[in-house]
Length: 385
Ligand SMILES: Cc1ncc(COP(=O)(O)O)c(C=O)c1O
Image (tube, rainbow, N blue to C red):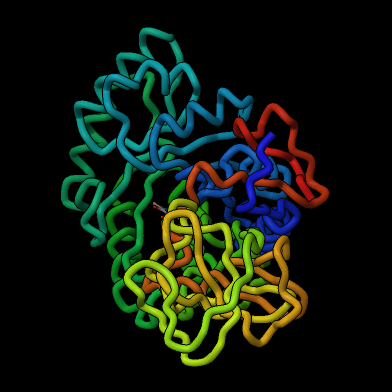
């Protein structure tokens, strides 16, 4: 049993509500829940199960291994692999009934061979690079590439998709350019069942990008992609990152706290030592910048965040004691430290804060959604409260 002081409570009711709201918003387009990077750090299998039960009709992962892990957990819904499939994994991908994205002749040949050997049909999606310039084939190459794929009788192009560079920026001009390029190239290709382009930002703000399918990640977890995305759909944060006070002590004026002596007490101060540091995924950039909640009040992080510990100034809260709950991210009483707020202070994005939670932080699933024990990663307690 993992009784760690630092724990990530994942509210699966929030995941369910967010999925329902997004699915309703984008209908008749289908909603695929993006659960790559272990469900944005919160647990791919529990999140996937709840999303599928709440209106998602499929899942997206970045890598074949992530899809194989979902199948191993017994998830049978469609799973689209967004990134490349290396030929050595082709057999497993076909056997598991995953849907690869193919953009290279080598991968296509390996997948087609595996499908032939297993006498199975293989739906694939083709990614078109309309300007993000990462993975994908250029619009000018698309007709020849689709023609090339047509030689493989087991292989069926089920989807064509693209990914947007600026869907969550204030200026969406380039996103519209990408959509125009995508519409133009796909209109000239044989029709497919699923054309898709939208992430959460586009799904929420740009209805014409929803097409046949929406790939929503961050919104499923209850966060908006950026401050530029309209708060037009109800999203509830799924994560509360909690810890406890493990020591309270006084430091006199002129004394310093933590490595590098970066914080100097200007008056007699009470300092709460809190379990939690960058070894748990709490960014070191929040040294002397972050804020935590204790007894429902905001307390500034003072001194350097270290690997396992951080320190907070609780001079204004004389009642703080060892064992008090500390909320590092989320709500406590009437106060809240939002993931957005911390991301801004740490000069990063909510996505990174979620996915950097380290394996030693137990994910504890709360809410009325049931998670079969078998779905829980090793060392996870269903509810330690
Ligand atoms: C190709 C692709 N589609 C969709 C998403 C989901 O994006 P979001 O989490 O902003 O909804 C991602 C995430 O990075 C992605 O890489």
